[in-house]
Image (spheres, chains in turn orange, cyan, blue, purple):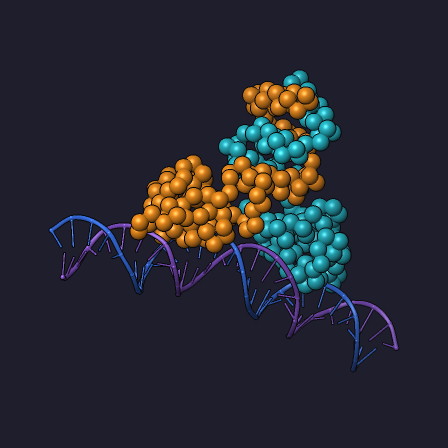
Length: 125
Length: 125
DNA sequence: GCTGATTGACTACAGCCGTAATCGGTGCGA
DNA sequence: TCGCACCGATTACGGCTGTAGTCAATCAGC
């Protein structure tokens, strides 16, 4: 579970999602994919790619005149880190209040509940 | 569930926690309370209080020469917003993958599991 | 009344973030 | 071979954030 040194900003995350979806990709590929979510210029996407490289969150392999970008951080690791951070910051590290919170907001569907039960059943074995 | 317009930054959140813990409080009270968590100068805390006021996240009532600060946003509302935002950003709005995620990281204690079961039991009625 | 401590307001400043324009190199088509 | 399109690199720039210093007013004590 490699630790993520630098923080991924909101805009950078959009780029990461594109790279996690498919990799490696050229800058223009990423830009095209990102265009579905955000109306950014290609330059903007390239800047974000540079910043992600500077933060060692992605890497690039040269392919002729262009680069092929790929994530160095797995989405699961990132997601785990963020989830843990939120749970620590807001719920003193306890997960059940989070679920209670979401439950009280009616944000849990019947399907969610069923899945949660399955997860718990699995954990008790 | 009042919507929170401006975002609360990391440092501002520390101040908010102090205010949620007890309110209203003077700036120095808040600074003292915050000192337990962060080694900040009183000025820093006052700046953060100003910024929170500018964002309409707290309000202040004059009390002689000083101000008494109080939150305008309930902790529960804030927490609900942040939780929802995270779940949407990273789990497509579904909560069970979050729990699965935390479970796979061994971040669930036996107590958590028991509490989750209770919550689920309550939800099914 | 004058002085020192206290308080909120204003100012500072570097670093990160969002968003992009521009520049310099280079490969490709005419 | 000449220019153009395309690429990554560099630069820009206003806003937010973290962290504080300084200033002007004011209250309390001598």
